[in-house]
Amino acid sequence: MTENPSPPSALTIAGSDSGGAAGLQADLRTFLTCGVHGLVAVTAVTVQNTLGVHDRADLPPHIVAGQIEAVAADMGVGAAKTGMLASAEIIHAVAAACDKAGIGRDGAIPFVVDPVAAAMTGQSLFDDDGLAALRDELLPRATVLTPNLDEVRLLTGMTVTDREGMHTAAVVLHQLGPKYVLVKSGHLQSDPECVDLLFDGSTFVELPGPRWQTPHTHGAGDTMASALTAGLAKGMPVVEAARYGKWFVSQAVEHSYPMGAKVGPVSAFWRLAPEER
Ligand SMILES: Nc1ncnc2c1ncn2[C@@H]1O[C@H](COP(=O)(O)OP(=O)(O)OP(=O)(O)O)[C@@H](O)[C@H]1O
Ligand SMILES: Cc1ncc(COP(=O)(O)O)c(N)n1
Image (cartoon, rainbow, N blue to C red; front, top):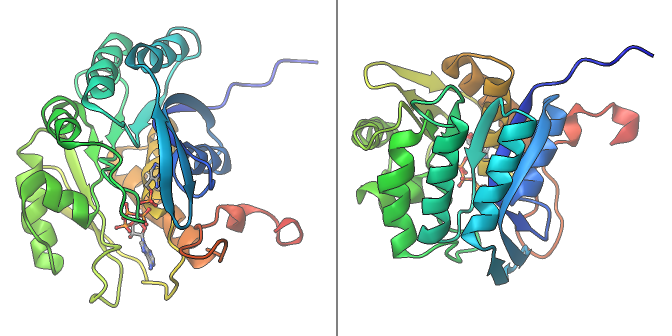
């Protein structure tokens, strides 16, 4: 038998969600569905369901860094993304490991920084030191920063209530160092559409889509950022990868389903054949 070609690969640096809706589970599922081999650096294990994050154990920073360095040295990373980073200590270790591996703004490997600060059920996924470290160490390394509107407020102090506010926030966030800012619009409930915004320091690109009327959006943010990362791993330019991420997550929200007492997961099943769903 002749050898099969290697698929593109993407690395997620993220926490585990025992509920399988968000975190590294959403990232790996999205990578698979997008035809990309998923590599993982686990940062923390959360005890989580749709009612909340009940407990967690953070991994030692050197183990997080070790995972990044091991896969980068041997298997090759086409693009990388962050999710829950848990602590300032883990962020220091991630920044150093990414520099070694060539991941980030000045390295060859595109780096999506999803500044996950809290679970949608409200529990913080890192403390104030973590926020400062994220802003100072990871934003300047980011190829694309993908905040939701709560993360915009944490990073800039700005409360965004409309599309114009998203434009202003994108400009302020761009000054913190990322090459591109992608402001996500899921929380702009007053808007009948769901239009994300990409900004590269000079040009705004709108990423339009319908706003599906469903309460089940758990994991939407991770799914958008990981589909974007998968697009980058396949070699798409950033604008094309952002459109791909938005297209992918919109389908995932449309096919979301109830599971558990509160907010159910978005679905990657939409890409399966109907008889397999
Ligand atoms: N009701 C919806 N209909 C269509 N797309 C949506 C909807 N809600 C969110 N999205 C899309 O999902 C992605 C994530 O958006 P959001 O702003 O909710 O981020 P997030 O808060 O990080 O996600 P979450 O906390 O739900 O995982 C964006 O691309 C957004 O456009
Ligand atoms: C391990 C982990 N990572 C990320 C999220 C954020 O996702 P969401 O905003 O959908 O709760 C989460 N809840 N858990």
